[in-house]
Every structure is written in structure tokens, then in C-alpha cells.
Amino acid sequence: MKTKVISVLTQKGGVGKTTTTIHLAASFAKKGSKVLVIDFDSQKNLSLGYKLDEDFPYTVVDFLEQKEGLEFTQKSEHNNVYVLAGSEKLESYKIDRYALKESIKLLEDYFDYILIDCPPKPLNDELSLGEVAVCASDYVLSPIKDDEYSLAGITSLIPSLLNLKAKHNLDFEYLGFFFNSVLVNSSDFRSYYNDFLSNEFTKDYLLKTFVRQDVNIKKAIKEGKTIFQIDSKSRASKDFKDLVKELKKKMI
Image (tube, rainbow, N blue to C red; front, side, top):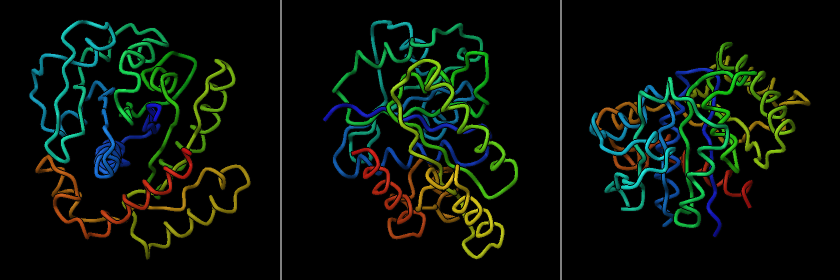
């Protein structure tokens, strides 16, 4: 199977982007896939979520520069999730648009999936880390929450992605967006969900699966684990499994 590269991208923080990345990786790994997770945000939340050492010797900046001594952290869960540590230097790093893509080529066919946790910043005329990640990707996915800020972010992100794809003749597919940390009986959620579903522009990008709010998520993050390790039968655990099933159908 050809390696599938997926960027998890939003224009707003606090929507569960890093948590989504971690749980997608674990879900793919549970099915026997070999997964690499790249921390591509200078805040290094992904590295923190995996409890990597602050001074991990090989980071994503070394990877971009294709330095020798490539080193990942292998997670014990299923033994086939590998993590490329983040770096604060990314914030000021002068990066080429296709630098990440070229580095990922060195790992071609070694992993089944490569997930990129991107910084929550808008795609605009200035080259950003998010744009560099998209240029390296086969697919892009966005978690959102049922609030005005998240919704404004996604309605501007989609046109930006489509423009970026056309401008640079990129070959990625936007898998869509899904509601994260949902209170199912909330009138806000139902209202926003139905609005997107009835909107001619967004309905094709709205994923059917949504992830319900679950206290086990916070517990898992605190312990550097996944919800599957904390409670494999919890509602959010089921939702992430369903999300992966839906994504796999779109990636065929």
C-alpha cells in the first residue's frame, strides 16, 4: 500500500486537533498499520501529548534538513506508532514550500500512514507551516467545535484550500471536517450540523461521524495515553473508530 499522508489542519486552536491526530494514529495502528506522527507545530503540543522528552535529540527541523541520525519515538501501544518530535525553532524557520514533501519522500512506503499535526493558523498569501504540510499531503482533515469561531474558521479554510490546490497544482483531497467534543443534545450542535448539511457548499465536506464529549479524553491526555487504553468501550472511543472507518472509505 502506498503511504497515505494526512494533514490535520484548522484555522483555530482549541478544537481537539492534536487529540484527533493522536487517536487517528492509534486507530490506524490497532488495525495493524505502521503510522508516523509528525509534530509540525512550534508549540509542540503533540510531543507533549506523547510525553516526549523536552530535549529529544532529533526533531522535525533536523528532518527538514535531512540530517543523518533520523530517530523516532516508538510508542508501546501496538508497537507501530512512531513520533517525530516537534521543535520551537519551527516558528522562525525559513522553510521551502516543498521541504517537508521532499523529506517525507525518503520514508516512502515505509509507513502506511503519516499524520501531520499542523499549527492552528490561517492559510493566506504568506507561506505558512500549514501550507507546507498541505503541499506534502495526500489528504487534509479538520476537526471543529460547535461555536462561531470554529465555524468562521472552517468556512474560510475550505476556499483557501481549494485556491491553494489550484494555484500550485497540488494533488491532495480534502476529506472534510467533523464536529469534535460534541454534546449530542445541545441545540447549538444540532443547529450548526443541520446548517452545514443544508448548505450547498459545505454539505459535501461535512463528515457524518462526530466525536462526543467524554471525560476519558482528558484523563487519557493527562496520562499520555489514548482513550482506547483508558476505556476502549467509551463513547468517544467508539466515535473515533467510526471516524476512521468513514475516512478509510473516502481514501479508497
